[in-house]
Image (cartoon, rainbow, N blue to C red; front, side, top):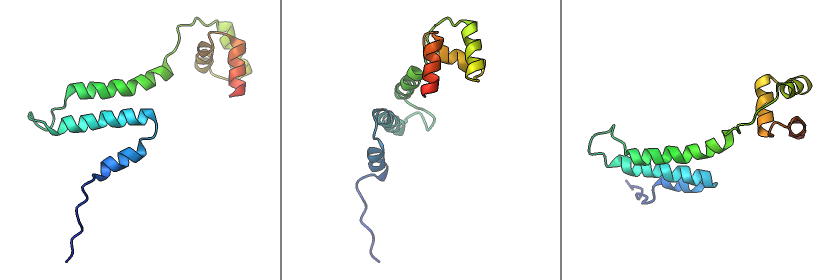
Length: 116
């Protein structure tokens, strides 16, 4: 019987390199690789994980999410919220969010909503 030669290139590494196309994907892949490398040298058992690598990976992933969801501390007029709820048929939470994204300016918020 003929045996297939063992491939020296790890299939997981090859798929990670081809799949990591954007900068965020590459950052996440490198953080996961750091976790994998540090996690295999466990002298304390299977449950021990290098805390530095884990914290680094979590911080790297949370930075991109925090930038998207960061809301400005903008005071929103309730009359503007009411205007958006009636005219654009939004709930109060969505109207408030939309106004905060546009610095409390109802006209800019409506134009952005209609243009989107």
